[in-house]
Image (cartoon, rainbow, N blue to C red; front, top):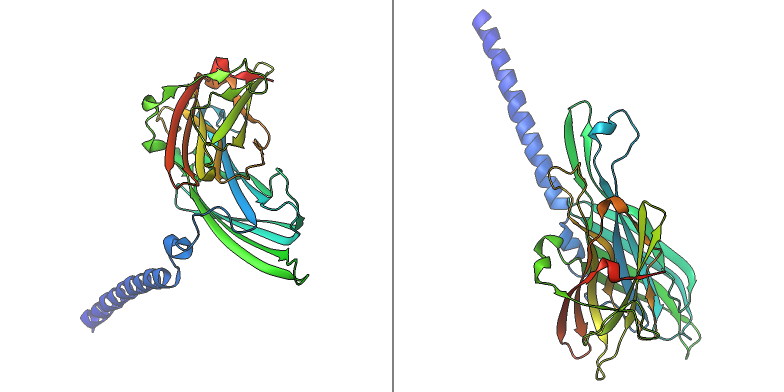
Length: 338
């Protein structure tokens, strides 16, 4: 009887273990079955940044912060970054009446997370102001946990942006409003694959009237103006402006442009978790030929990082379907101040 009792306990434990394994396996299978992959959800998103009425431009930037001086473990704190994302919408026809605009953003992060945001407007005019902006959308950090006495890395840097645009436009023939919808996806240029040593030096025009602060153009389908401002003793303010350009009848159709500041990494980043390149501005999508795309507020870079150069990488597709690549660097000290 005693032996039977012991055997029963062993059998019960075995059954419980098998049940737990089967249940866990079932949960995983069901999750994979009913939760579509990221590619499945967004593979049909378009790669053309406009429809017949609206043009979309996306921007993102990094705000690098020095270690926090608050809390109980200030000696353990390391630097961190926040990521801002901006969405611009521009009408092709400034006279078009567009209402009930909704812009949905999904950002895929470096850690594989999805971040969701929405912007909307009852009416929309042809303006260079951003349609929607999301400050501190993602965060990159290496935080110390006093309980485990270990660092936990988080990288919610947006690496791919998916947008879905819904709106209504007045039909000039019927007087009624037609419902419209289009999608667009933009991917960053992958910092880890950029060979900054292959970039060529480019000058900033600080002499020509009306062109001061502009990157000297070498046939690009855009003009880029870069400005810096020294505020006090701790912060450099940087901002950029992008202006589309027609070259021999060819205009811009799609773009991915990123501007990086080369910096001295912070001493606390002993693992080189953070890059020596800070993304101060970027442009994805397209721009109306009559528009100037402004930097949405200047980005602050603490002077402890000691900026030496700015790097510009651009991949642009023209209306002739020809793809061009620009890789240039400029001396930070030559950039126009304002």
